[in-house]
Length: 338
Image 1 (cartoon, helix red, strand yellow):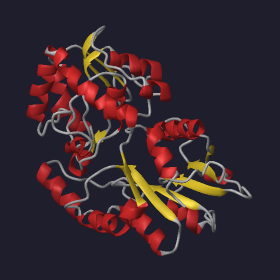
Image 2 (cartoon, helix red, strand yellow; image 1 turned 90 degrees about the vertical axis):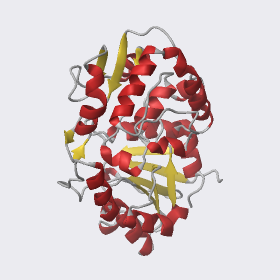
Image 3 (spheres, helix red, strand yellow; image 1 turned 120 degrees about the vertical axis):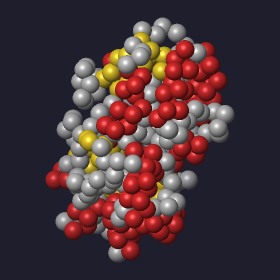
Image 4 (tube, one colour; image 1 turned 45 degrees about the vertical axis):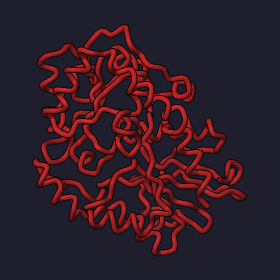
């Protein structure tokens, strides 16, 4: 692994104004890069500058995306692009992945995965491009599987660590086992509709629990609305259980997102609905439910038996302190691109 701190200027592109969900990871990445000793600029594309004697590393998703960087002449020889990979991007508005597991499996089997295609096209055109994204499983998704197998040496599939917790909170994380003021705590966006969003997951996995247990919810479309970081942390650390539920697309891809890592870094506990947890932890280290019915049953058990959460929190936090965090992840990525 190389020390590129004196060689790179890292650019986080777009999402500089609060409001989009991608503002949160970009904000975290900026803090991480500064902690690691990298020069970092978080700007819109019109504010990109030249840096004689240094190489620019463009971290982009869709505003601007890799196509814009190339076609508008922003990308130049010596630059590096890190293309964020998700299943959908700016060219996929209005797409519906279906309302049943069978419909979703068929949809993603044949889905084009436009962000992966953009990455492949840029690579094949001779652009110095890498890709990064939350670790998912490509098997059974034909186009994604083809591209991942072809370009696996240029893809960083990572634990999408907590955007909420500081370096000190990561390195000193400990279980929180008392002081609770409610049974359930959840902070996040509740958005979309059946077939595109997480509304159906919330209805199936969480709403039945809210009818039976006390709760505190924060985030867009919740009674509190948007909450700041201290309030976010307060809600989670004062809740016996913090549901870790995903949009159906993430369950289909077996992804594990920020909410999982934030909850456990803060010392609390949640059950996840994604089999992707087993890509990071053994079956005796994490609690995973494979259906809404099992999710609700397990949630009730762990709300009533908080002491049983402790072994899972301890095992998960050990790996978070060691490697499953953004500080370790970005040091690895930036030290292995050239």
